[in-house]
Amino acid sequence: MNGLVWTMGIHGTTINSAMNPIWLMNSDANRLAIQHGQAPKAFFTNSFIDNFVFMGGSGSVLSLVLAMLILILLKKSSAEIKTLTPLAVAPSLFNINEPIMFGLPIVFNPLMFIPFIITPMVFTLTTYLSMKFGWVAMPTGVVLPWTMPVLFSGFLATNSLSGAVIQLVNIILGIFIYFPFISFANQQQVKAQNKLEADA
Image (cartoon, rainbow, N blue to C red; front, side, top):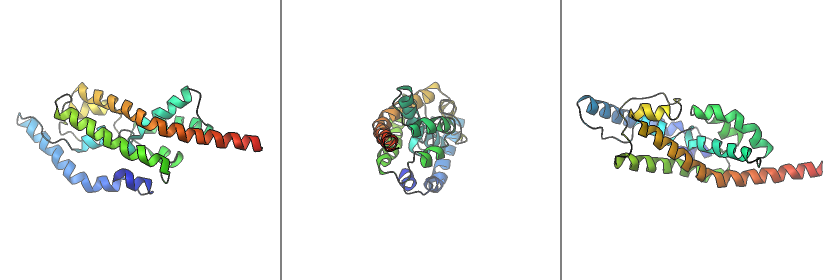
């Protein structure tokens, strides 16, 4: 729902705000469990959503920005992507996605709807299963600022390096999801750019 409303131009945090009371209760339940020497049981907490699902902001766009950076390094990027990517890298590290949302854009862009909605769903599944099977530590109940950079946030949310590792795994998965879509969008931009130069 977060991704769906974003693609229609409505800020996705409206959905997060509705869920926040539940996530906060789960965070506190985990905190109390640890305080009483028990294992935390709640998966879906503020830290889970902010630090493992929405890395780079809604749509997990940090992976998209890194996919764009790969296009630049391969010297295949359009002028638009070459200009936008350096402006988007720093904000996306702190989970701020507006430069990508409105600069690429993702809002009202049917091509980017698919990875924008699928990527957070994949991150939710991989993180949930990793925690369920005990490969990754559960959220401890700490509520971190949503702007906490990745890897630091994964470690702090779980008090374990496994939290940072699953973030890294998810980011790589996200690059593979986003890359075909941004590659196609890039090709369209390059064609339009070449046509303009030819007509000039």
